[in-house]
Amino acid sequence: MAIRFTRVLLKVSGEALMGGQGFGIDVAVADRIAADIKEARDLGVEISVVIGGGNIFRGVAVASKGGDRVTGDHMGMLATVINAMALRTSLTKLGVDAIVLSAIAMPELCESFSQRAALAHASAGRVVIFAGGTGNPFFTTDSAAALRAAEMGATALFKGTQVDGIYSADPKLVPDATRFDQLTHDEVLSKGLAVMDVTAVALARENHIPIVVFSLHEKGEFARILTGGGRSTIVTD
Ligand code: UDP
Image: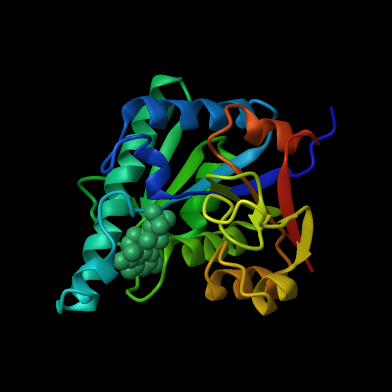
């Protein structure tokens, strides 16, 4: 079976982990995403993951209420560490060797990020989960995903969403929105398509990393796309 991409960075939003709940982590959903990651890894694909924190905290929530944005972003980055630990637990339960590397040092909980450590863990066959975003306020975990994809030499950045690709508008709000099979990084930016933030798309463009947008809701879809099936939008140069 031909594998389309052999070294992949998967972005999982925090919201994906909360399932039907309005907040926090639904362990059954985390277990399902872990099973999808295992299925893809069992194809021989090297996988690392950047996880968001929006199911717990976003910095803008503090800033919009008159609080300090930087402190809010620190809180958001801590939220990503909580999610990373949950995903590591789910992967470990399935017998997948996984490790959390945080952009913010917290040695009692997990290892600190360095590119060297990340590459070493990946080549030892571990699923590397990147926590703490970029480690800097005013960034997002989408940007962290593009950054880590470049650092890992990933051949694709997979963005798991609620829908099966990029649309001209949110298909849940605009039923006749156009779905795209293929786009360029420039088109995503010039059309203002809100699939990832501008910094993330620009970084992927600069490093010639394709972005594959797909539904993380669909069980097994990650592996299907890796083997040439499934539904997704691919963004290339
Ligand atoms: N964050 C940050 N710097 C980063 C990544 C994330 O400050 O490099 C903070 C920011 O407050 C953000 C929160 O962490 O709102 C959670 O990340 P994000 O919103 O990207 O999570 P997602 O939407 O993917 O769940």
